[in-house]
Image (cartoon, rainbow, N blue to C red; front, side):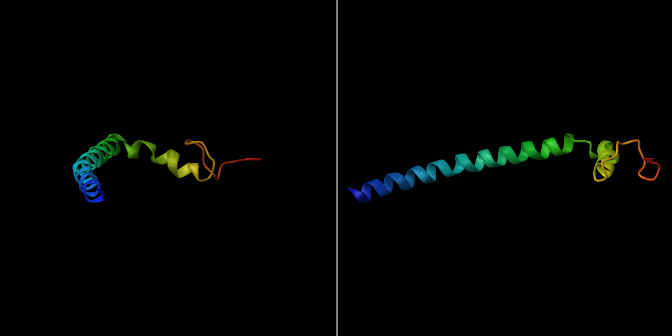
Length: 65
């Protein structure tokens, strides 16, 4: 009995592995596509100034208190 259960479980695992591999491949391709669509050059001034808490057009040297 336990031998047949082991065989059934083994076949189930072997049958499900390609499904999980295909799903992982699809999700990875979607991630790559989204990263290509993201125009990172458009956002670089905001990212640069985000460290200092400035707005994109403000300079850290021109601030007055």
